[in-house]
Image: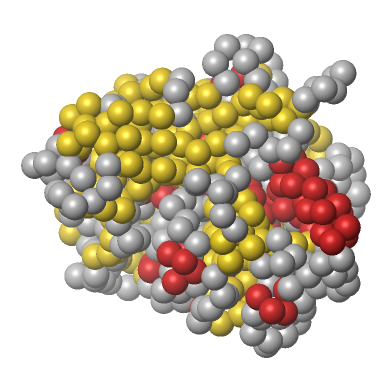
Length: 592
């Protein structure tokens, strides 16, 4: 906790959503416990936190107000129309402040998506938390604040400021992925309606709906089963079963095409938290594809690919280490960043690796990158693969001629990569967040135009050539002195919890840099949350990549629950001889 109380900075931004047009101030929130959720809608960890906050909103609704502060990473996320769509798409039922210029991000000293800042009923910041997995600790803190401020007479209960926007009625609502069924119909994951829609081959008429439409995880007949924001679909070789990536439920589900009955195939319903969950718990599976005799899962939540064997009902890690970055080589020891689209053809598995804005592929046990330069480089540029740029692609479809179509989501385009010439071109543009591309058996190409709530045929005509623009995420860099500095991860267990050493060290810290030459000393893995780093004076700026986690358990409870808090930071730094020699990052608590 802090040694001195700090007033919360006033809330300012471009606009408010979910308030009925009202601009909120801290004075409007006085007497309520307020949680500011700094998020950006591309970020899978931010989406996890939205799901973690829902039970708290329901439980403490008359005392707690959650404010989403949207501080964008990608250029597309600065678009107010895109933000409004994301708020609906992901079921955000609290006010959202559009922090387009990241003013609030700087005022509250956020350094990672997501970050939670807790403001007490008197308007003071009392806690900050980075990453996901804080729901239990946050609930304990809210309980403490309620007791304290009810006793002081400073707690004001009542209805919150949330005002639901008007609902729109369309055939689909933010569809995610699509496949062709053996009968020629299309099966679409109707994500915001928490169901699957079988459509006629032209994609315009509903044949049947699988799922009740309510958010849930019930198995059973088509009209009783439920999903939570489903995404990827894969028809098994038996052509009788479709595997569904039930994303927010962290499950794979199976659908019998004849009966429409839904059953759970693998997953616990809770997200993966540590290596002990390998093969048991999933984390936001976003797409699925049949490759190498198994179902491959794009495990967006932990930056990996997993495999699933339908015959055995077993699953495990296929590629990736959970480090969010871009590194090629023999699998599984590679780095990925929120893989979200898969397509297999001709011995290759193509991957839309969304957070690195990359197109990648696996063949003969090795991962390669065709297009993509890193976590913070993106744009709409055609040309050779090494210099071409995408912006947060979510879908990919391999073509019989060996080329690949990419749903370049945040550029609103469909791009084509030709491995033979190593050239990227733009096939169509002006689309509303295309999230998948489907090539039918007859050769038609359909695009899932997610934010337009429809499927469209790819426009015919000559391939465009786009010089486009290059972008780089420019968050405020942290100045640090060259040479020796100290990295400190601030972590204070939640009320009623303590660090858990039952299975070994309770904390873990992994540090790397881009470029790697930035770090002379200090890279690697350890168990101490403080690390001596030596920064190379010859490298003026770069990104420190930090992964920290802490295991805690409940205190003085007979059957104590265990908790794991984890966060990845990509901290932009600039070397300055007058800069500090200490970099504090808050996992949970406040920097003294």
